[in-house]
Image (cartoon, rainbow, N blue to C red):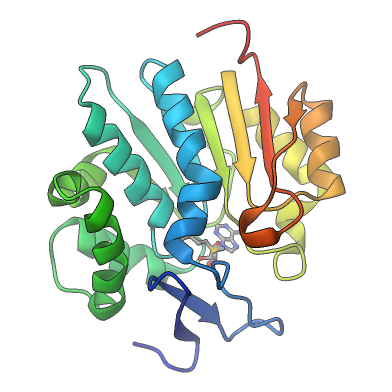
Length: 237
Ligand SMILES: C[S@@+](CC[C@H](N)C(=O)[O-])C[C@H]1O[C@@H](n2cnc3c(N)ncnc32)[C@H](O)[C@@H]1O
């Protein structure tokens, strides 16, 4: 483990997160109220809504980090056991998080095993059966890339955009209105649901300009607001 670049921190629900020591803000990947619970609160309902609404559901996750969102998608998908195919496109700029997660998917030892075990214990409480198959499923159906980019082969394909970037202070480029508009226009299928833990003016303007409807939704653990926005959701399946 690279003690200089990051620190492992425990959140209030007993699940681990990472504090990035390379940025001036030293931002945590998750809310200190609970990494697992925050993932369930912000993204769980959205994942279930997309799975219930769409055939061949496709998700975009920004960024991978410890992989809580990708594992949650896998567990929810494996729980309903369907004949169609679910796929995840995920971006992670940091090679360390990508490589270790891919090794975990392959069932190989990783430098992050101690952290991953704590993370997995939380999932095993809610998804004991599914967690046995989640790594192999992710190996097959997760497509993992580096820096967030607009991939032509995924254009117009995404039903669920799960936007889990660091805050605008740490990652200002990822929260700029024009950047978000281009990203959303590129990836959104119809129907499409966009969710994130934050609610910034630039994001709301970008979503509205892209034809999304914003829905009122409280943030996690007393935070004022998170974002839940839909396009084409009421009209088609
Ligand atoms: C809040 S953390 C994500 C936490 C993660 N969803 C989880 O469940 O553990 C944000 C992640 O975005 C990554 N990141 C930062 N800039 C990025 C970029 N331009 N493209 C892709 N990933 C980026 C960071 O390395 C970090 O792992």
